[in-house]
Length: 402
Ligand SMILES: Cc1cc2nc3c(=O)[nH]c(=O)nc-3n(C[C@H](O)[C@H](O)[C@H](O)COP(=O)(O)OP(=O)(O)OC[C@H]3O[C@@H](n4cnc5c(N)ncnc54)[C@H](O)[C@@H]3O)c2cc1C
Picture: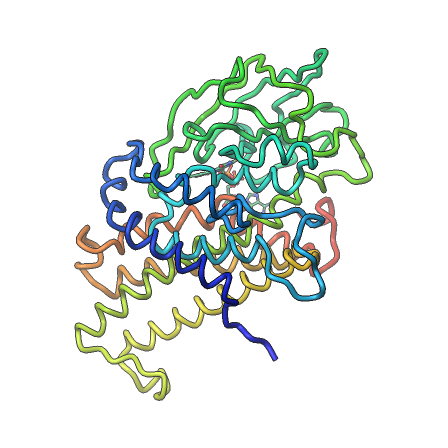
């Protein structure tokens, strides 16, 4: 039998994350939506708490995600860093997605470090705040098309290139940069490098103005003869053409369920708000009566809630598999595809069903509708997730199914 009740330890940290969301994030949600690029100083008070969570392996948005070989003793059924991070991110994104992405020391780059770093690197980079820089002006979805170069010069790597749309790219203390060490060797030569903020040659060119998640700084970064120590290359420096892209791609198996969790948290916020609005308008939502016998808005609500529930279960499965050392690329993509489009559908429908009130800035519904879209784009778009799912199900390679 499946028991979906949260274990005590996870419940405690999720409750704590919910308190943070309710008491710190929600109250300033609109403020930083209107004040794009302003630094959310309220989050500084959270740094110490987050550090505590990380020490206990329960980070809010992925920093505590472990490598396959770093998971707690897997005896067939365990809940580790992936499940804890999923639970926590659902709660903080119930509060605010943009602010969650700005919580110090919780960058997507931290997940990359946790996924591929050596033990020595984990010691050095375990407590930094790392953003993740893959995307370049010449590509987004096709992450094998990296053109940023890394050339070894004595004891240092010299990086050159331009990275765009880097979440927390201005505020993070470190940036995990994807670069190729040998363009002739294709995707196998793409490695990730930890670039400290103060590294010579790293600069922020500008910040993007966006549709949503305005509290999150999205930066264009320039790497101009940027020098970093040789041992800042994450994981195995060997270019193994057989193994190909596997090393860096492993990051996504951990981060996609977390991005799904972001959409799940936002979706739950929208559903809760919508339920209140409908009930106040006299619409009764019943679980005992068939949907077709209920008010049209109630029937729509039930359909949205069912989709939300499916997203939640898929994300639980993907995170559980990661914690239990089971290959989860297929399930990670399934969870992100479902949650990404459900988050968008739920929040936009909530605006619609709440009418002009929903479209106004009085509730946060219109903001959530704007914020939700990115969760169906970054860490792989809806179409890319579906492509990955199709490849896995049909047993096709990326060359066979593009
Ligand atoms: C706010 C924000 C934050 C971001 N944060 C980060 C970050 O921290 N780090 C980072 O590296 N990147 C980040 N990104 C970049 C993001 O990951 C990319 O935007 C995303 O991968 C899509 O790439 P693209 O925008 O170039 O679209 P494209 O790849 O050009 O795709 C355009 C459209 O074509 C579709 N498409 C592409 N290829 C296929 C295919 N083979 N089959 C079917 N459809 C296809 C896509 O789904 C999409 O709908 C961020 C982007 C935004 C907007």
